[in-house]
Image (cartoon, rainbow, N blue to C red):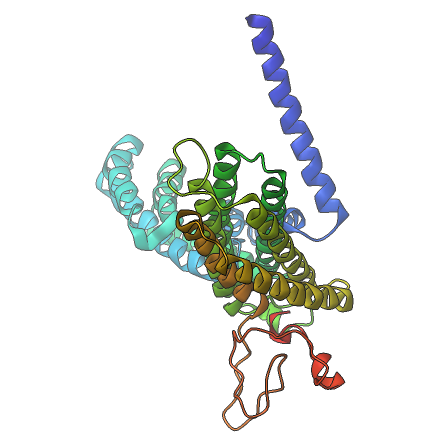
Length: 434
């Protein structure tokens, strides 16, 4: 037993060491969240050193520790947070310093007595939600003042000046030295959605062709579809960070390199609906599997053709991932166009076969699968159009007939001989999502 525990302990240590090694290699290899973390850490350390050099070495302040301590805390994830945290910290430090000075004067310089008076008040005040994570600094500032033993108004004024110097340096370093702009995570989450959706559709198609898929397999597909909701929540969080990082950030006005702006939020709504339809498909399949199935399973021939349709939906997702990444764009657009036309043909054929079914219970499940797949394909092939100012004519779109206004979501029709080459070669996707 002891040997097993030691082995498990070494495995945990080895796992942590390899994880750290992977993080270091990722930071050295290229841009990413690992490198961003390294940059922010170095900025915080540099701000603290600069604050100490100014207050402790040049100005010879009596309690120069306050400046680097404040600067270190204010190099935050966004410039907006640095400004907000700086204001919060200034409030709590003023409160802590004044209360500590008053308590020391009331107790005639008794350290223990001043602590008994001040710490309960400052600790409780620090829990106020408006002060956020900076609330604890009121109590720690009071401790500095009390233990240092300097509590006259002049000496308290020194503490406040040191704190303000540290705050200015911390905020300036965060705002002017590689100011953080959280764009990359939006791209990462938007690429995860089509990638993981394609993997799920491929797995599901392979299982449906095998005719041996079980209730466990179907439950696993449904679980993977539901877990795509976590990616949607991560995408929403990334959008919030992106919006916050643009506030008061001079990085948008200074010349800097970085990832391109993410696609607009219209893409998020499309994927929310697509994930909902994919979850409904897997839920229906799970309801037709097992000994206690709630629905009658469609026939094997229907499921094989449905698997082909799922494969084309996966191809659409993979092409969408490449288009978001803007890699090999022409090839991805051509692959997308072929998959879209093939999916329409497969769906039309499967819908015709569905009308010939004579088993009502099986037709119920088949119809639900068809309806959800139709809506899934609709979302994968018709993203929202960019907003066009009033009076500006919208460009021609694939599938538009003369005399009929084009609407986002109109199904694209297969190419026919009477279509002109210009119409057939129209772009497969709106460009505003790239």
